[in-house]
Length: 336
Image (cartoon, rainbow, N blue to C red; front, side, top):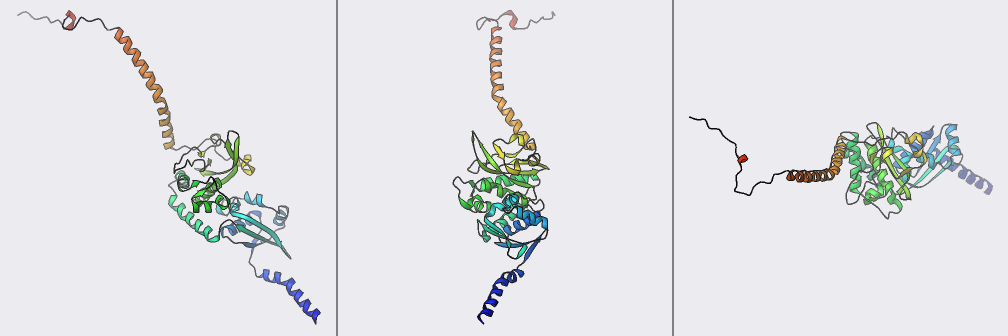
């Protein structure tokens, strides 16, 4: 009797996981892009665990080879749905675990841990969606400039940030963030506007000092340009444009790494910086202003020597009160 009881308990224990799992919703994916897009959706929805059914042998092999697929996931970009791209969503994960479900060799369990609570995340994306509609300009340039200026004026660079303040969500809530937050917030707003944008990671610095850094590249009028809102934040709501829409030849002190350093990636960036008619006008005014003092100096020197030369040619007139013959025109009167 005891044996039968133990046997029944053993059967229940062995079958319970698969029985319970059969009722669990599984997301079917056949390619790595589909898997990474689905995982990004899981992150945006702030779900702790999802199950993915791997429908092809090729994808299963890719997952098996890349058990730690953090790198390929962080490089993933979905042009049709930029926010559902691993290159953005992986920044929101504090930790994760992937494993094959026991007894289900095609079912992948993905467990996520996040920096911020789900309600905070939802509020952030709702705010950003509304904000993007308000900031969107008449063209790409106006939209990108509006995002650039808004972020710089709203937040300040956090010199002593720790933990979750590296993300755009916490950065916007506290109005303090580091470069990662600047680039993530720019990515979200521009993506909601339908403007292609990427987050670039690497190092930056000068005088032999460099540190990890993040910035963006953004597409304006069909061309890609470098964009670093962090370095354009001069503090006290002051916005500068030293690193705004710069070409690869006009973007010093930045060194991209990983896939961002590959020629396939760097070659898409414009050689020259983006200039508007207003920028061209400002550049002309600046150039002319820089010539004012040299030109004035030359004019003063010229006038000085000219007057000096002219004064040396003035005749030595008699003392005041005397009249010489040449002072007045001679008239001939007609005799009557």
